[in-house]
Image (cartoon, rainbow, N blue to C red):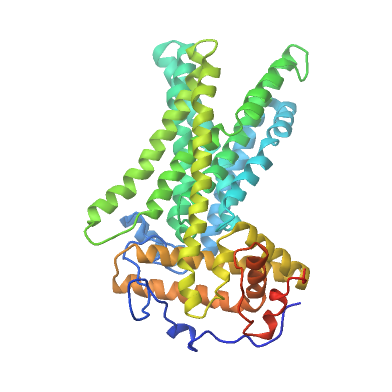
Length: 479
């Protein structure tokens, strides 16, 4: 059960709409004002839709009354993905047979939980909503896979007829056509979330996670096809699950389950850099627009090039595959893993730098920014709430942490950008919304975070609790 005491208001006492936050460099507290093109702080419309890439057709589509309905958009998207899934199921089953499809499905599912868990762990600082991740996975496994299978098959047949060289057509299709088609199809999911769920796309980590889920879904479907065909070859020799199936499973599931996520993550990093692009005085709108287009395209081109090198490694000789795997794929994978973890740590440091402004205004306890900038302290706070008040309190602490993280990101982007009246109004509205969410859960989350900050050693001497309800958080014998 939740606490039922009356929470003291912030100091100075003021309603949410009048609360101001001090900005570094100013003697008098004033609201932080974002720039006109700050990611996630401008042009919000209802569900967070934003004009990241202005175009007439997009504006007309969003302006129509029919398309404004969330139910209409969700229904259209679900029908599109469901239809893609049904058509894809028929195509894969036709190529592999029923038994081959079932065997491929059973074997292809092995790396999926590991990859999903890894990307979700990376997204712990500001976890995005599951609906975005489910959409990304479903798009990769259904729509992108259907486009890739159809386009690749058509291109290979056309090249074989044009060149009268079926073997050369297969090689050309694998090294040139497939990387372009597949990476473009997967990039569409990242683009859609970037455009229509802009509030939840705030930086490199979000780009990596969304790209990873999309590519994991695509690799899942592709593995079903390859493993099912391998099982069919073994069946033709009467060996059942023989050498071909085992070899395909070892290469695609054991050695390189991260291959497709690794390619598409480069595209996600490009979109993540766009989300971090600030707008300052002296930077022209033309330069900002060039970066918005150039960075995702550069990431997409790198993904295509890396994909082409991986697919063409077999043509480099008997040891070509192992050379590309050991000298290129593994180092790039290690570097991108380090980059993602470093970016997450940078986000935690940013929380510790931005949230004290709200603590000085009375919205947070002085110890809360210290706890919120530590993943261990955040986990301890949720555990403390669960033990003290039950699972509902733990969920409230988790929601409190998400809102505080979003508030810190909002303020960070606002300070790095120029101000306009429109962007200032958007910033104020979003800030008020997040502060209200914090205040609704503070009576449960505040003591838990203070307790976690003390247990982790991030604070040594604590002031006397300003409210009796915080006494439990200051009691070192309370667990």
